[in-house]
Amino acid sequence: MEIFRKTSCKKMEGEAIESFKIPSIVLMENAGERIANYIKNEGEKFVIIAGVGNNGGDGLVISRKLILSNKKVHIFIVGNLDKCSSEFKINLDILINMKVDICHLKSEEDLLNLNRLIERDTLIIDALFGIGLNRNIDGIYKKVISIINKSEKVFSIDIPSGMDSDTGKALGICVKAYKTFTIECIKRGFIHNEGVINVGEINVINIDIPKELKEKNSEKVYILPREAYIDKIKKRDKLGHKGDFGKVGIIGGSKDFVGAVYIASEAAIRTGSGLVTLITNKDIASILKCRVIEAIVKEYESTYEISGLDKFDVIACGPGLGRSNEAKEVLYKSIKETKCPLVIDADGLNILSENKDLLNYIKNRSILTPHLGEMSRLIGKDIKSIEDNKIEISKKFAKENNVILLLKGYNTIITDGEYVYINKTGSSKMASGGMGDCLTGIIASLIGQGLSLIDSALLGAYIHGYSSDFIGEKMYSVSARDIINVLPKIIEDLLCEN
Image 1 (cartoon, helix red, strand yellow):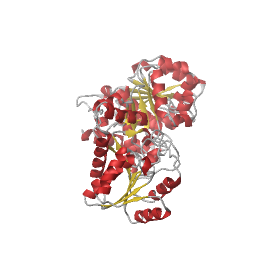
Image 2 (cartoon, one colour; image 1 turned 90 degrees about the horizontal axis):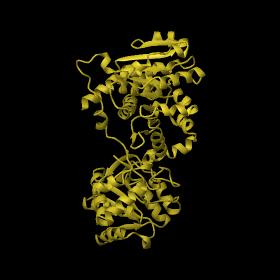
Image 3 (cartoon, rainbow, N blue to C red; image 1 turned 60 degrees about the vertical axis):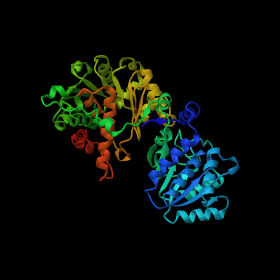
Image 4 (tube, rainbow, N blue to C red; image 1 turned 180 degrees about the vertical axis):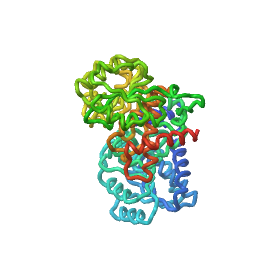
């Protein structure tokens, strides 16, 4: 599924009308009919609340289709009918000619009537505003949305009324949708800020916009279907041995952060790596040797003792590394003495942010996995400005530095600088220490098993989040250890779906 900004949506629809000569009223009919076909099975009684623009016109088509399906429908129109769109007027006239009762909502009495209907377990269809809204909602519209939000089952058309379709922020007030039937594509606002919550379940409705217009106006931002991730999982060769499944080096750990490198190593092992070597400071090596059973633990007292890095298929550097001068030397060595792919996380990223010359040595072979705080340090911008423009900032950084960037958080962003992918798995149940280290180990393991950098980042993020979703069905919170324990089962279950 593709994600678009409002300018691209408008351009795409405008070109369908102007270049392909598809009448706007035909697109409206397609939208209304197809949405009605979904909604009609949800119940018997409906309240349609329509504005006077084309979003409201969609609502009137839906009303007509539901009436023709013998549903009980109450229609409320909000707005100045003298300023309605021509397509809205056509559909309003059809309903008037069908002798349908329509309330032009103006008075407090009308609001009370609407409120009474909503309290009677009636399903609400929100067709007040579309993506063109660019002002804060006030007056009667604000009162109407407040009433709408008393219902637990609201179906929004294209976008929840009151949402900024690019940022997801509420323009004063926003409908809290149970489901949103969005036209042709997912809107940017659905994955940002409070839009994530207010949009509810997303259903994309195709209204027959020509495919070439989608391709022409594509912003190359995608949510991949589950099947796309499953297709990336490699089946294990029956005759394979441990050398065939990746030699993974994990460098990190310090006196204050023993657990991080342990978690990364365990995650790599459980994701299916053939050989995992943990390289760490002598101060904590003895602790790790007692904990890590299936991995080799190599210790160093001085960075001069770190050797053999060129033997690895992939190196993950950063978990628990610290930010000392020695840690900086370790990262320099990991980068400058290797040609293999790198996964850089945690303190590795913090050191990079203070030594940006190192970015010149990791081009075309690295995945960086910052959270918002680490990203802020990397690019020198505050977290809020990144949150408001995550896709463009991530894409720009990846392109300028020739790296794969995985910006962690709800709706994780993964980009190679040209294409952007949004990972929808995972939740706030994962908000605990060690989660990033676990992801680092998973991604490093997948690279070692022969996946490309971009596929490793995509599949790693998906498996990481999906493991949490699987466990979280019966648990209040999920730890990195919980995820590590289920990794082999999750990967096998996904593989069996193929």
